[in-house]
Length: 412
Image (cartoon, rainbow, N blue to C red; front, side):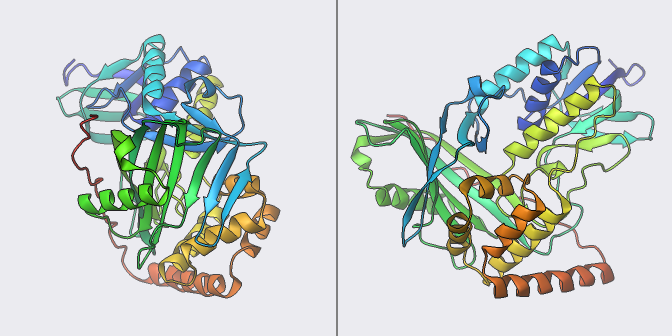
C-alpha cells in the first residue's frame, strides 16, 4: 500500500484503547458487518493495563466480562461511614483484558484492516478523510472516529486533574468484604487545594484493588503516591506483613470546563475523553464512552451517519463548571460536597446524576443539596469569567501530563 494506492475504507478508527475497543464490540453486536473498516493504532492493546469502575443496571452485554460487582457501597468521612444500597443499580469493575479480547474477536469478525502505526495527519475535505500514517501509508475514509487523546479547544476557566495510584493487594487471610465496595473514603488527609479519597474494590476476601485518588491541579511525586497509599492501607487496618502488591495502576484524567469539540470537521468524530466523555466534576468516563460506542453502532446499523449524542447535556456541563469553580476557590470542601449529595438524595439519583442521565427535576433536588451561598458565588464568578473569555484572545489549553509511574512490584 503506497501513496499512489491508498487504502479506501468506509470507516477508520484512530486509536485502539477503551473507546475504540468498545466501539468494535458494539459494531459486531449490532451486526454492522458490511462496512470496510481500518483500525490505525501504534499499539496492539492486550492484557490488564487499566481498570474501569462504573454503575448501571445489571443484565448488559458487559456482565460476562466483569471481575466483580456490588449492590452495596460505602461512603466515608471523618464524621461517619455510610453504607448505600444502589438498587436498582449496581457498581461494577471491568478490567481491560477482557475488553481488549472481545474487541480483537470483533475486529476479526468485522474483517477490519489493522495498521500498526500512529496517524500523523488527518485531512477532511468534507467528502472523504485522508489519514497519513507514521509508516508512510495513506487511508481514505468516508468517516473517521478518533479516540486518541487530544487537548481541549482552549484553556478552561478551571482545570484540575483526577490522578491516582492503585495497588492490587493479595492477602494471606480474609481481610476484604467481597459483598461491599468502598466508593469514596474521605478520611484521607485533604490537600490544600483539592480533594482526596481512597477506595477499595474487592474481588474476593483476599484480593482487592486499593486506590488513592486526588482531584487537584498538580500531580504528586512517585514517592508521594506510595506514601499516600501506604497511609490509606494503614487507615484500613491492613497489616502490610500479610499483603503482597501484585500489580500497580497509575492514571491521570482531565477535570476541566474547557470544551472538547466532538466534531472538529464534517467527517471526523471524536470519542472518549477527546470527544467530551469525561465528566468534568468527577473524571468519570466509562459510562459515557460506552453510550457513545452504542449510539455510533446503532446509527451505522440503520444507515445513518456515525454521530453520537453529546456525552452530557449542556446544563450538566454548566453545573460541572460551577461545582469545579466552587471546589477550586475553596467555597465548598470536597468531602462535605459529596457527603451532602449522598446524605440528601437516594444513592441511585446521585449516581445517575454523575452519569449525566437525570431529569431537570432531579437536578434541582441535587442542587438544593449543596451549600447555597458558595454555589451562588461560584455561579456569578463563572458567568463573569465567561464574559471575559469572549473579550480576550483564546488561550491554549495545557496538555494533560502523563501518569507518574514508579517501580513495578516484584510480586514476591
